[in-house]
Image (cartoon, rainbow over all chains, first blue to last red; front, side, top):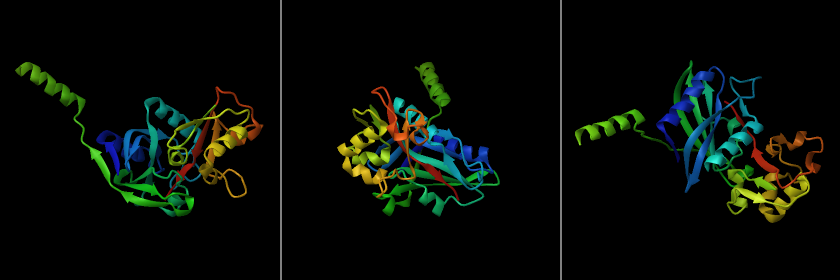
Length: 162
Length: 91
């Protein structure tokens, strides 16, 4: 299961619209516990596949090292990655599986049609090694968030009515 | 020096996210890592003993493959190695 806030969910979907018609990509930082990958932050990354950015993505390892370091400072691990499929379904491809190496991590794919984010799916990379790995559909749980402004408004209302 | 272990490989390091070794070179550090945690070896190296193509090893912010001395680069306790499997794909 992949758990993330509505804000983070929206951020990674919007990223795919911003980079359209090219693929976007990014890293999901958070915690992994009992089969649940909980995302605390989605970090945008550059797509180095400028030769074929409409249907390929690659995150520079050097950027990953930096993002991993940022996460460590917050007590977060890399728990997944996201990318977009411009004008293509939100399903993993043979390329996605062949180039997925982070077992136990979530691979989130958003279909972007004519510049608008459509379906978002998440796939858990299961298996014990490269030889038996598989991408398996997992549930995405988007947690409701009370906007800060609404919280403040409620607090003020309480102080007024008290 | 510290060696940072990526999430998928921590199952082979007893869930440690960082392994500390005393090493003089990058190669020495990796050898000590796989010596302490032998199950890691087949996930990092091919049967021919070469680093798997998708496994990147960074000394601080430098890719070891592109360092002039590569795995014989001298290290100190203040350095850190990061093992980073690659991230790529597409439709």
